[in-house]
Structures are given as C-alpha cells and as structure tokens.
Length: 468
Image 1: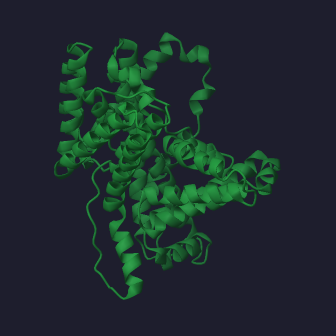
Image 2: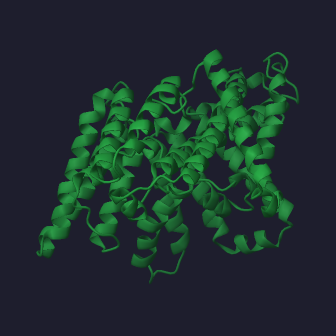
Image 3: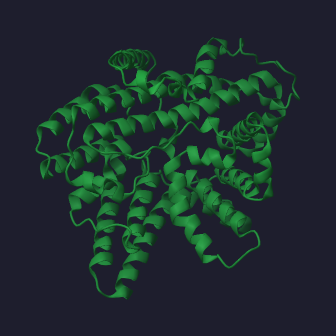
C-alpha cells in the first residue's frame, strides 16, 4: 500500500488514526500500531510478511541473549550470528542473481538471469535492526524487552518501506508513551501534504519528461533535449524520495514520533561531500557511524591513502545497498572517487574557488552521476554522454515539441526553484504570525486537492526508492 494510493489516503489512514487517538496511550495504542503496520505491509507484500516477522523475532531473541547473558563468548556469538542472519537475508534476496552471474559465468556456466523478488523495504528494515544490534552490543542503547515495542520500532509503517533509517534510541521513549498534541497533528498533516504534492505534482511529472527523453534513440538525441531530460530526472528522484520522507515524517509526528530528517536541500551543495551531508542523510549517517568510523579507527596507524580508501569502501557498499547491478556499484564508486579526491589537497583548492563555481562543479558532477544511476545498461552511458556533449547537435531529431514535453517547462522551473530553501527568505516574525499560518493551511489544502485530482485522473506512480 503506497502513501499515494487513494485507498491509503481515504480509507486506511482515517480509520487507523481515529482508532489510534481513541485508544489509551499505553500498550493498547502500541499494540494497535503494530497490527496496523503489519496489515500495511501485508497489503503491499503478502508473500514476504512471514519472512519479515521471523526476522523481527530472531533479532529480538538474539538481542535478549546479547544483553542478558553474563558470558562474553555467548554474547559475542549471539551478536555475530544476528549480524550474519540479517546480512545473509539481505544479500540472498538482493544480490544472489548478481553473484551467480558474475562468479559462475567466467567459469563457463551461462546461467539464465534469475533471482528472488526483493521483499518490500528489506534494506531499510535490516539496517534499522543492525543499528539496534550494533548500539546494544557496544552499550550505546538499552535493551528493549517488550516484543511489541521492538516490533513496532522495526515495522513502524510511516518509515517501513523507504525510511528514514531510524536508530532505536532516537525513538525509544516515544515507543513507550506517545502524546498527540493538536499542534503536532496540524504540523504533521501539513508536512505530509507537502510531501504528497512534491511526489505527485512535481516528481511524477518530471518522471514523464525523463522517461520520454531516455526512451528515444540516443544517437539522434540533441544536447538541449538530453540536458532537459537529465535535469528533469534530477528533480524526479529528489522530489520523489524527499516527498516520501516528508510524508513519513509528517505521519510519524501525527502518531507521536519524531523521525529524523533525510534531506536538506542537496542541490544547493558546494561540494560532493556537502551533497552527501544533505542527501539521504540517515543512510550517510548509518555508514559513517557503523562502517567508516570503525574502519578509520582500525586503520588509524596507516598513513598512505587511508582516508581515501575508507571512503571508497563505504561508497562501494553504498552502491551495493542501492542494488546489485553494475550501474549502482559504479555509481557508488563514482561518488566515492569524488569524495576521496576532495579529501586530498584538491578539497582545499576547491574551497578557494568562487562559491558559484563550487556549486556548478557539484551540480554537474551529481547530474552526470545520475546517468550511471538511471541507465542500468552500461551500453547506454556513452551514447547519452555524447548527446549531452553535443555530438548530435543541439536539437537533434527528437525535440521538446516532438516528444510533447515542452508544456512541462513551468513545472521544471518551479521544481528547481523549490529545490532551494526559499522559505528561509521569509522572516521568522512573518512565519510565526497567525495570518501566515492560515495561509499555509489554505495552501496545504489546495495542494492536497490538486494532488488528489491528479491521482484520480492519472493514477499513482510507485516511489522510486521502493525498489531498494
């Protein structure tokens, strides 16, 4: 069940919230939240619900052993076993076909492409569970003895399928007792409606532009049309994923949870390192905390290119996390290479450039990286890059008019305008005024009506990061 599904918007969510607020704040509310989250997952992915529930139970039991036993060898064994179980399940479903093809094909086995359907949200579920296990074993959080609360942490439906990746200790107290003040409900609704509009009105329309451009014969694609399609994809993936995150954070706030931010206007970044401080922030923080920092500590006595190689390792894993295909792996290494170079003397030279050149360099590097991300077949990379460079001329055979995408230009311009923090231009005194709040509420209602009208007329499109 997607957040942009009309059944979710007009049936599941109103019924769930009505029952939720009427229940006591103790275990009945927690139990109902868990049941609703299980139902939410079952509606979207019935064939894998037993796997997810089994994974939750295994993590709960192994975590209890890690915490309760006084025998260090038993605690460590349970800890290692828990990590291996989570990683084995994730790799089995996400990477088995990749390893079969790339390990056995060189040996002469020409196997057909095969794989197992990835359970919805498995990457986010396992990373949440792993963060809990890491923190628990290293005494950075307390054990959760209540199975319902632990399962609710993992299965919480606003963050279940696409994050944000949330550490257990960040919402530990909220799992026990959640108040739902009217101010939080109002703010949460507005945040969720903003996310819905970002996804439906901007991301989905920019997706139409990108899809039409990317599907033409790349040998006939002019530079103008190619850049229009690529920049439209920049907007699509940003507003699609940040729109989901806005909905998740808004729904979480309505339910009494303070979920972490995941985006901070990444397209205003002035370096690739700054981009990753702003893009998919919870994934970046996860890898920094649980992979990069331990690597740096373990290799602290090494001097030669230690930092650079650790960065490349992290971004190789980041590419694998997105998908076990060469385009995602190379996309991760592409970003890792930029960050590794920026961690050298080039990073200091970059800071000396005018701010506008820093920003242009970052946008160009990010945009070209999306070519690797978007085209799964590497055979398409060079033809599209040649089109961007003008090898086929400026207009080419396929133009904005022949592809019927010129009419999307106003949304294209609006999307780039909204990718900057324009709200910060409004003085705090104005933003806190009653008139401005009333205007914001009216605007949210208008965006909601426009989004619903679009969904009714065209149907909902799946979120891009749903596949990860």
